[in-house]
Length: 368
Image 1 (cartoon, rainbow, N blue to C red):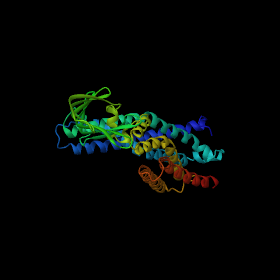
Image 2 (image 1 turned 135 degrees about the horizontal axis):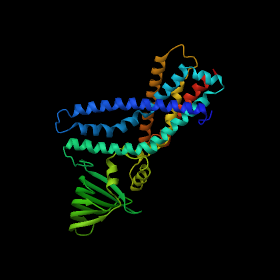
Image 3 (image 1 turned 120 degrees about the vertical axis):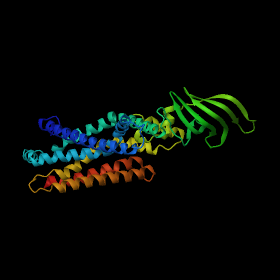
Image 4 (image 1 turned 180 degrees about the vertical axis):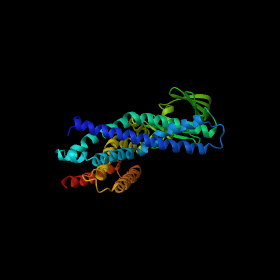
């Protein structure tokens, strides 16, 4: 059955309506719990108003929703299939000669489009909002309404100067003021590809502005040469505030469109990009994982004879299977991050296993 046929459009409308209805309910519940938790945390902070609490809850909401998004799709599909089975529409479609695969095709296409929209359109907004949440949360903790501190534990970062030399920068603390990044206790070590030091630069403070570090109270150490002391020194770099900030941001808080360039930057600089590459591949395959969740829902909810009841079996079985898929996904992802299995295999394994098992059970249902 074509998704553009009358029946295909009808099934598409059903799954979209139930998806947005379930999503609205989940968002409402998550938002309620987030607000209650934030109010509890700030109950002894009279300076924290309700407006800030709502900002924190709203900016954290997209990341929480992203975690439960596959469950939202699965529940929406289960509701859709259960309604069609209860009203005997599924039986009528089968009697009219529509196979179970023709029945599922419009639903799978609609869910796949939802997954693509989530990755390409919603994910960048979600990443930006979570970044805002981190900033607001830090401001609330420090009681500084203008604070934008990347790290109070210092900074270690590496940059490839050219094909034969690399630079390692260490700073004891750093913070951002407007467009400038301020560093304290800066140490820059230049090394060759064999990790042999060529020069060490120490500065009391530094400012990153327009592609260069403006260092203050500088001492330059080089083997075989006397120590050089300068009041100021310019050190050119390809780093910028965004690149440095990404060292303290979880891959989940980085936009899908920005991940490829960040992966290339890390690998060129000698850093491991395992977590970022895993995140990128997981986003690429997430629409297919959503389709696999639809197949799981079909196994439990598509029943030609609905008179025998068993709604509790439907609910418990579907939710339990969803949690097993989620647990298996996180477990295999952990193996991928630690290098026990290739990244692409770690990302694709949960989808493949879920799809193959669901298709096998649906084939049995079709033959029956």
